[in-house]
Amino acid sequence: MIFFDLDETLFDFKAAEYLAVNDFFKQCVEQSNQHADDFYQLWCEVGKTHFDRFLRGERTFEQQKIERIQELFHRSGLQISDVHAQEYFQIYLNRFEDNWKAFDDVIPTLTALSNHRLGIITNGDSAQQRQKLEKIGIMDYFQVIVAAGDIGISKPNIEIFEYACHLAEENPADCYYVGDNMDSDIIPCEKIKMRGIWLNRKNENKSHTRSIKRLNELQSQL
Image 1 (spheres, helix red, strand yellow):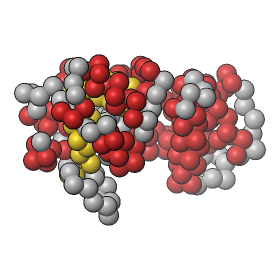
Image 2: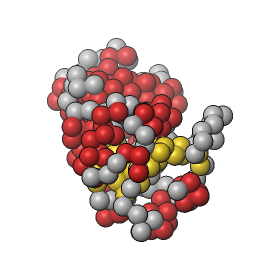
Image 3: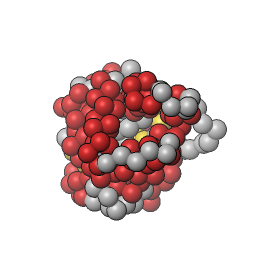
């Protein structure tokens, strides 16, 4: 069985985020003294901090949305209520969802793998991750989908990989895992004997026994 990461492996998360944050900046923040690029960097920094708290089980998915917006405004010297933070996050979320798309090599690759069982192992909220799969048109390719929000365990914890293999009724040693992040995808999956395939879309200066730069190179590693 071949499992895939979702964000930045199949789904172009950073492109959607960048466009949505820029629109949010123009609509809600541009009157401040911040520069758009600086705001985007701050958004990423604050977002990672609060999303990591969700992954650790310290906050619900909804709480981390509210708190990241409140911190963003607090950095500008403004205090906003939970209700207003929710409203602001929804403005961002609408634009984020408008820009959801798969990388251009995804559907051809998944189609070419029709003789394999396919699955997803992803961090994130269960409902949102499945919504992404539906909206970018690839949900039906996968027989098994496991999101961190389903089980309260997130990568790089090896238990999420073990859970997915158990759910699929597959021996980990008979499974591949394709992901873009060496630390949270490849290293942990290989600890349970899955065969990690590193998708190096960013052409990072690292090496791995099984690595590809585009998804359409995947079959050469199977």
